Image (cartoon, rainbow, N blue to C red; front, side, top):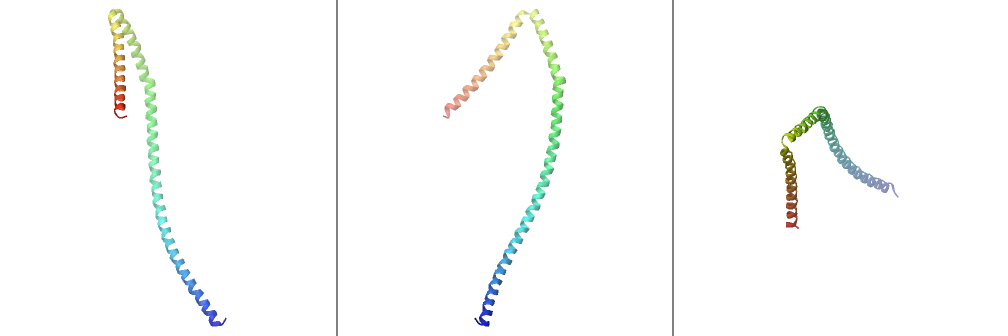
Length: 140
């Protein structure tokens, strides 16, 4: 192989490498663009995470306030409402007994009133079931 042929071979190889380098440069440019986009996305995600952290902190505060309020309501129910209901119930029993002694018929009326209220609830329950049954039969 002559020197001229060797130089031609080297020249063709160098030209091929130039093409490869050009492709590599293009790939690097695309990679740089992708990295820039990725950096922007990461910056947006950081902002979103910061907002989410703030929102979670606000939610924690609100939950804490709600827990305190619920605890206060529970304490009020135990200390005030339950005692008052018990007092009213005890007085109601005494009043009912006195009324029963004064008017024996009232005792029966109260019993009948309780029975009628029970029957009204039962009829409403049965009507509801019947309506559901009719609906099911109509669409089955």
